[in-house]
Amino acid sequence: MTETAAFRCSPAEKARLDAEARRARRPLAELLRERLPLVRSGHRKVVPEADPDLLVALSRIGANMNQIARALNAARKVRVYDQLDVLAISASLVAIERQLDALRENGRR
Image 1 (cartoon, rainbow, N blue to C red):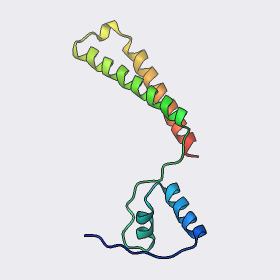
Image 2 (image 1 turned 90 degrees about the vertical axis):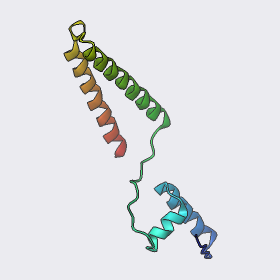
Image 3 (image 1 turned 45 degrees about the vertical axis):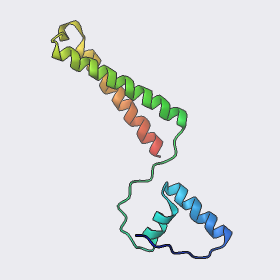
Image 4 (image 1 turned 135 degrees about the horizontal axis):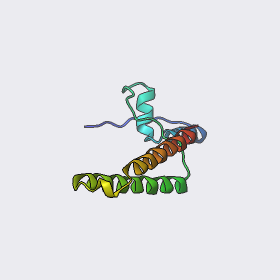
C-alpha cells in the first residue's frame, strides 16, 4: 500500500525540481524520497546526454563486432581456422574495441 504526500511550491521551484529529475533521469518522486532521505541511494549512475546519431553508429559497430566474433567461434568449432587469418581478425577486433572505448571515454567528458 502507498500513501500520497503533497506540498506547495512556486512554479519556479516546481520547474527546478522537474529539471533536476530530468537531468538525473529519474522520477521526481524518487528524487524527493532520496533527498528527504527516506530511502538510501543505490541508484544507477546518471547517464550523460549523447548524440543519437553517434549512439546508432556505435550500436551498429557493436553489432558488427558481435557478428565477427560469432563467425570466429563457429570457425573454431568446425576447425577451419587455417582458412582464416585469425590473428589479423583478432587484432582488428582489439583495435576496434580500443577505439570504441576511447569514444566512450571522450563522451563522458
